Length: 210
Image 1 (cartoon, helix red, strand yellow):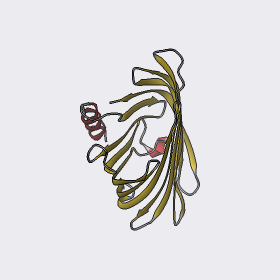
Image 2: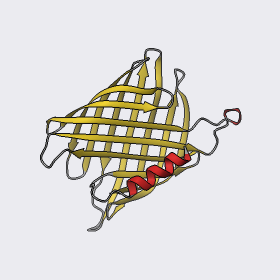
Image 3: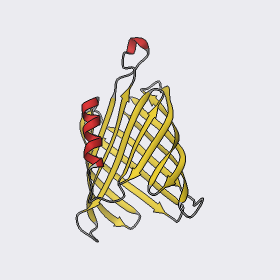
């Protein structure tokens, strides 16, 4: 897990031709969290493209006897087609070590104004055990000065299958945006399994658009 985590950091920090790729690292009291989201078009002005999303959790305590949980890694890759300026359909794969590889289809609704950005994305994963997911994101970035903005984000995901609840989380980030770098404090509330066992991770984050 640590090798994958480090390789991902080096790979995506080294991307120089891509634009507006959010890369975030949060150091919390329970784990280190890395996530990125890449959205690229096949060519300028094209309705088609591809997307790659990664979320990795590197825990300080993985021994379940001592109250820890296993590390987590999630990868998603899609071919995308924009059918409306605000609506994109996506087809590809979803992978975690627990679920293995699943075929995945999703729809993404995105809306952006001067200070607000919103995404809502339902998804269906087909595999040995089918699952259904809803992802949402809301960002608010008003100007504080000519060079500084407030950065705030609420992000959630909830995933269910035939046996009920699988995995959910809610993330809150509040900080400052300066020269395309965001930093501040954050908290993530995680839920696991049919009983929705709850854990929390709070700390500091840094996020950069590369």
